[in-house]
Length: 180
Image 1 (tube, rainbow, N blue to C red):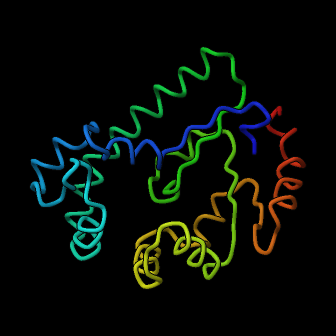
Image 2: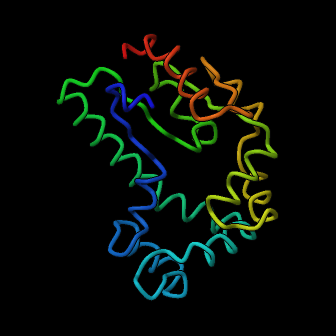
């Protein structure tokens, strides 16, 4: 919604997915570290297989992050420089693991958290990702808590029970703060 008002959007999750897609920048290192059984027939990261390993073996999760996160950080910087060169005054960094990363807080002018109940987060993720509820709960257990994310926030939009129009109205109210 901020992008529709002129902000540039840098989506860390989309960058991570591109790096693990067929011929993505992370694929050679993933193949070397984990083996071909962690790639799909098309050459992408086998997310289901990796999810099973990563959530049962913390060292595997850290090894995957050590491959993917530097690539994501590099691409974020490239996209940010391009936005600045284009004269865009507001850049929205969509960083799902912002609280977990530790290094982003000092690099951002403002942190906006879109919040909801954990039960809603689970339902939305199940609907979007076609994962089981237990798989989503397992993922959530490895992430920063809702309280930790809220503690980082400069602004919070509570997106519980809001229609898309109501959410848009809340975004419209805060957009001027970002020069939009």
